[in-house]
Image 1 (cartoon, one colour):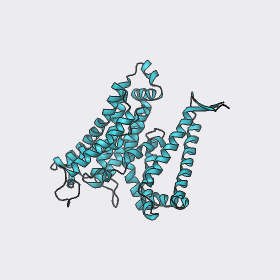
Image 2 (cartoon, rainbow, N blue to C red):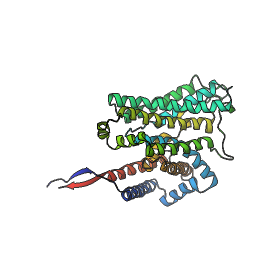
Image 3 (cartoon, rainbow, N blue to C red):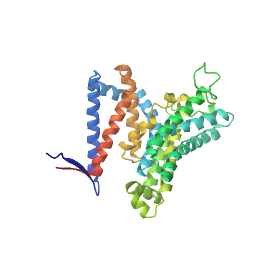
Image 4 (spheres, rainbow, N blue to C red):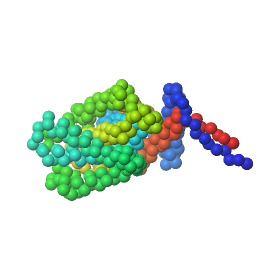
Length: 357
């Protein structure tokens, strides 16, 4: 008896209805899988889903926190959408966020006498450059030596994380922090203003929205955007057409890493007003942003919505940890399940799957 073989055939085109249907089915299956996880943990899935929704979207406080968490997700998610569009699989946005936070913190602590109109722009520019240069390392290794960027960008996350730990436990450790591994508080000139009664640092939110629109226009309306799309869909065709793959790979990674670096600036200048250990800066924003990008189908404008939804999931996840006594890592398991099913759905939109007997 012959064992059936599975063969994948690339589709010549993927209709819009199929993409929408695949995403809807993927999310439905992900919710069912998460319900099974809740049941295995001894929790009523309906109660858990209700708590998540109420925690993230069911109150004024929850909505404010959801918007707050959506800011770094939006910045990093838009950047990752661009990188993935150019077929550069940047998995290291978390590390690029840390590097942006380091550079911004260094400027705030080194030049406390600078006025706000100089210091804050310098921090954003420095944070962008810090994240961009960190992302350039795997880009150069991929373009020049064909080293897998997934592995290198992921490994650099741990290097950046250790760099943050070294600074807050070592030379940048504050003098008025009662022994905690954090820096001194930033001067007022380096602190981003917030909306009343919230932690929403609205300047970073406005910047994130503007950049999402700009990246969309870059991809959809410019010659460079066309080259990025062609490179992502068919690298061989792009090379045959004379497009510079190395230039495109480096550029999308620089922008992607830079946007993640801006997310790091927003966290230290708009939330904490100091540099903290890695787990205090980011609860995994750089990794969650991967889901933001894929849920948005690599559309920067759609990433605005998906970042808000994932921000709500993070807030709701915190709520169920307390209310239902679930492990802190539960929300990360949910994120992984959603990403797994979304990527599996993407496979069906790109390929015909046939059984050969």
